Image (cartoon, rainbow, N blue to C red; front, top):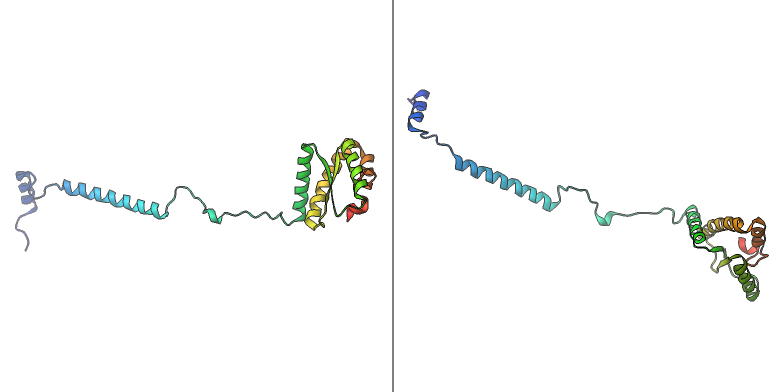
Length: 177
């Protein structure tokens, strides 16, 4: 079943006939290239649609969370109290915080508080609720910064008298309870 024609004879026949039975398949090559490009575009389109390849990594919104561990921590409450005191000082307020019900008769305490506010610009903020460890830590940090500012403005002697209750406000026993 071998062909009787030699390789030279076939080559000579191709030369004489101008391409002969081995014509270039240009149309088939063009169709093959177009099909390959269409297949590649389809694959990339599916990858993009199903999110397999992303140009930018974006975390899913529902998985983002932040936990502030300072919320239940007394040290964090002290920091927040100090920050709040600095804000109040910048706003021009001098306040000291204390917890518990009023100890002295309300009218006498109100008169001393009014005198203290008018003369020195200092007010006592009384919290009627019982102090929790976090609220007490907040008040301690707040009062520490405020006391330093009061001492800077009015002197150490005034601050000592104020903390003893001589200028109005709670006495030392009320401040610690």
